Length: 234
Ligand code: NDP
Image (cartoon, rainbow, N blue to C red; front, top):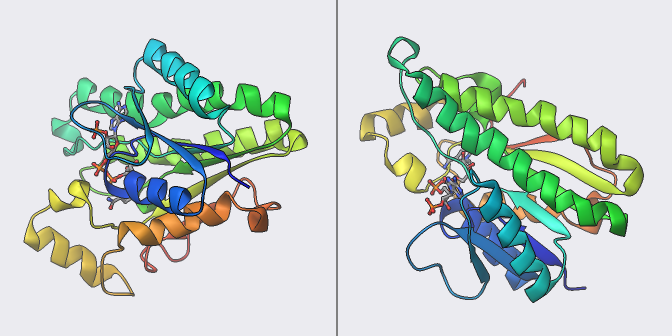
C-alpha cells in the first residue's frame, strides 16, 4: 500500500537515498530543500526547518498534494565543528536550532494528523557521534544525543496511538558532510571502523525503510546503529 512519506533534507546525501528507497517501493514521497533545483521524482517543498512558518506551509502543501504524512524521516542536519574553547555560542545554538529544535518542529507538526489516524512512523536520523562524542563536535554531538531523549519521550507519549518513534544512528557515510573532511581524517576514521570502510547512503536507507515497515511494528524508542561496528558497546 502506498503511503505518504516526508524526508526532510531529502534533496541530497542520506536523505535523497532514503527518499529514493521509499519511492522505489511505491510510496508517495515528499522531500524538503532550501535552495537550488531539487531532484526529480518527488514532491519537493521548499522548507528551512529553522522557520516555523515554512514548516507549516510545507505540511499544508504535502497534505494537499499527497495526503497527511504517515511516515516522517527527520533527516535534515548540519555540522559546525570547532573545539570547545573556540566554539562561539552561535556555533553551538545554530546547530542545536537545526538538528534538535528543527526536528522538534517537524515531528510536532507531523504527529498531529498521525494521532487522529491512530497510526504513524517517525524515524530520527541521529549519529554514532551522539553516543560516542567527538572532539570538535560538542555542538553536533549534543544535538544528536538530544534526539535520543526526544524520541524516547515521544515513543512513550504516542505509543498507545500506534505511533512508533525510533532513532537511526549512522556511522560515517559517504556524503557531502564527510567529503569536507581531510584525507588524513578520513583514514583515521576508517581505521576505527571494524568493517573498514564508510557506509554508502543506500545502506542507511535500508534501515530507515525497515523502521517504517510492518516488520518493525513492535519496535519503538530504539536506537539502531548502522555504523560498521564503530559504536559497539553503546
Ligand atoms: P548533507 O550535508 O549531505 O545533507 C544535509 C541535508 O540537510 C541537506 O539536504 C540539507 O539541505 C538539509 N538541511 C540542513 N539544514 C537544514 C535546514 N535548516 N532546513 C532544512 N534542511 C536542512 O548531510 P548527510 O546526508 O551526510 O546527512 C544527513 C543526516 O544524517 C544529518 O542529520 C547528519 O547529521 C546525519 N548523519 C550523517 C553522517 C555522515 O557520515 N554523513 C553520519 C551520521 C549522521 P540543503 O541542501 O538545503 O543544504
